[in-house]
Amino acid sequence: MALMGAALWPAAAHADDHRRLAVPLPRAYVQECAGCHMAYPPGLLPAASWRRMMGRLDEHYGSDASIDEATVRQLSEWLQTHAGTSKRVRAEPPPPDDRITRSEWFARKHDEIAPATWRRASIRSAANCMACHPGAERSDFDDDAVRVPK
Image 1 (cartoon, rainbow, N blue to C red):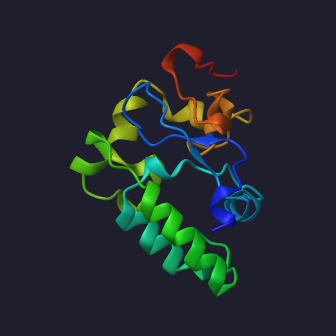
Image 2 (cartoon, rainbow, N blue to C red; image 1 turned 180 degrees about the vertical axis):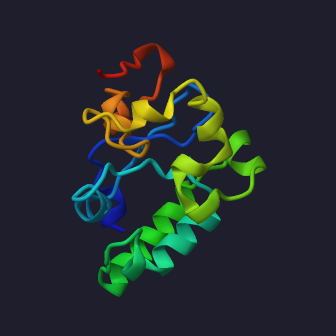
């Protein structure tokens, strides 16, 4: 598929280590998802979470993110292919509401972050990876690069 070859930047396949197995992000994924939030690496959620999310885009966390059926099929296939298979993602139950920020591995990795920190104007929410991880758009979540803004 031509869509699958439209690499814009790499996505992480492993959420639990510093190895970055890059996968090309389909242009449609970036266009449809990054308009509202970061185009999250598919490896941050298990396949079941992506499947549910793509099946209810009309109720996407309070927004209607509906897209045409052909694009849903293409992106669903890509998300299933590149969904999290790492030890942390695979071994845990899908996160509540299929939210990356409510996954067990996310909570463990961010357990030292005070709730007030997430509410800072410079961060706004735990879902704003780019606020603290300057390489997040390149799927670089290396702990050594983290910079928590004031």
